[in-house]
Length: 370
Image 1: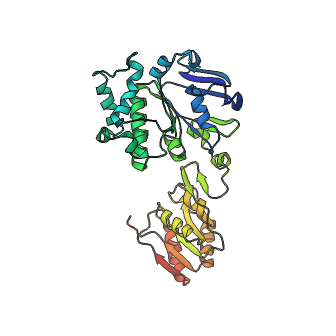
Image 2: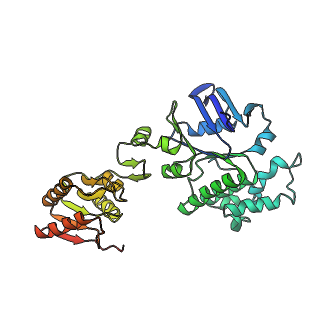
Image 3: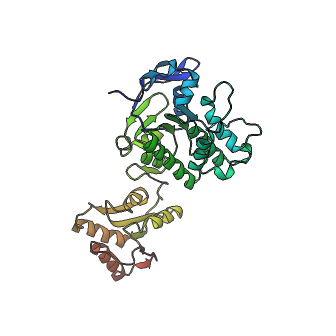
């Protein structure tokens, strides 16, 4: 298969010494590839090698069937934009001046930005919401603002492919989402191909067409999010020993409380997640149930509960699970109920609440609007 961007047996490293070898990537035009892996695993080294900031130790990189190594600096800068975490050195430059430097590959030997370039400069700033700071000194804005200005500079360059190293690191939640939405829009509207590294696994899972997993000496996996985010893999890749990451839901939880559980939580429909996490913060072990396996509470319960009682989705609660829940309530002194009312398929949990009252357990109703 012919890919728009591909590498063949690419090896990267420093001073002629390979760090990661035999990297084979294939991307169609307009796809988003995200590199994930532990700190120091070599993600930035791969990106810098693709961008020709580091010399390849071996192998070949192709862009639209042409070797990157054979492209002139001007041709490459017209087709590829690069945004790395290193701070750009500027002197008396406004944010608009910095964005305008993205037009330099098209300005000729004199490097003069023409009036025809300014609509593109303005459009790029509007896309990443930095128009309001265009006249401010670039050195006197926040790291998050600086990151967005550099993205505007890259967009202004009108590249076919953009290389980004941890572009969301200094952005708040609002601007992370806006930033990734801009990339998706550019991919849809202009066929922009994106290769980037990010730390936020849940974002990588949602925005990427392909994911490359890097682990120090080699690439462990390359494929779609569905192929990469399989149960237990992230724990292995990052060497997680405390806490958990749920690949299916993209949720990360701290380590569960230790000790004998003395609290039973009746939840469901997402009503218990906040209580589970509160009990975790208070270091109080708990049991919870009965949950359907497709319930919003289920992944958090699986990560934090000392014991959780669950049944398959869309199946009735079996007698064995109900009896197990009765026994668990009997072993606890406190029952927390997160439900204000029970749905048509929650008769079992309604029975648990009634049972707790009958045997004299302390029951607390957790107020929650549903």
